[in-house]
Length: 402
Image 1 (cartoon, rainbow, N blue to C red):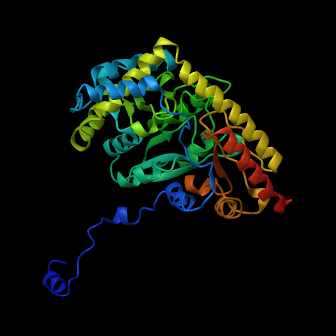
Image 2 (cartoon, rainbow, N blue to C red):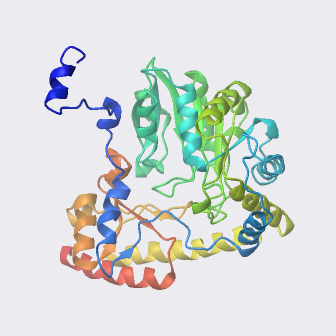
Image 3 (cartoon, rainbow, N blue to C red):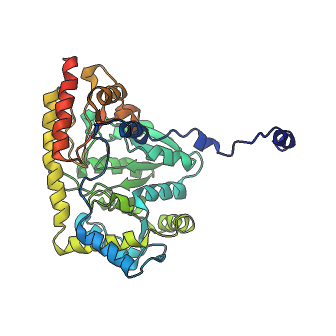
């Protein structure tokens, strides 16, 4: 390249400055699909993974007040001390997790937390085990960290959980990290203590690190969430990821946090310190109020939101059955993941035709991994009126396959 450079300059040639791993990175399957949705007039979207609730007024008011008072500076890299202390108290109160505030790091959403952890812990060629179907960001983050994402098949008959047999089949001497995300996006699956204990046995046997993304921890229906780090011996080999987006209806505030053993905590802190500096101060003031408000009334707003999602969940399951679609019963998050096999279409074909013919947007299951290709993801985090009309259209669409 250096030898040919003068010749290239003469003819206005320029080298490709984008590195190889970024060039081959595919755009998000979700975002790509919804670029089309935005251009479809009259479309109803059942694809957005975002609460339709507005951030509660006391939280918004606290943010406004902080700006009015001129609180617009950087905070400490780790986050504001009152927020760290409240997160520590929250985790102990709600999920029986004990973390010293000095080992909690406030991040710009849970997404930054995942990126930091993988960059801090991955050596080139390390294998990152990812239960499949899975949230779309895990495999790209693994690749960008010079890791190798390895899909672990999760079948509906196993509750969309990684069995010991599936894990053992995927593990090699290069396996280093297992990502868990329960309650699960996209399937709505949850993991009870028994299931987690079986996973923990494999984790200990093969000396793996677990990244436990529990952003939907508050949104379970019928049973309480169990955190992987609460299992005996697992806190020392688990990095916990949480945030405010889902349970507190604060997606646009972009605020998450990571709790880790001391050595990993220091590693992620250093990367965060150099690349992000700190999470936005206004969002941190809002989060402080969200937790204070929650402790004052036993998190009544969270409970109200969960009850609303549960009613919609039951409606969606009944509506899917009425339309002739089979669906794994979700018990967490705000997603359903019905199979479309009976239509003889792939998930992508189904989603494209449903949008074109009935103007209802769902996400192809293939966006979440190769083992989701015969399903679609439906979000019920949308208004009841929109759900009713969407399923009227879905039922009409399905009649052609009966």
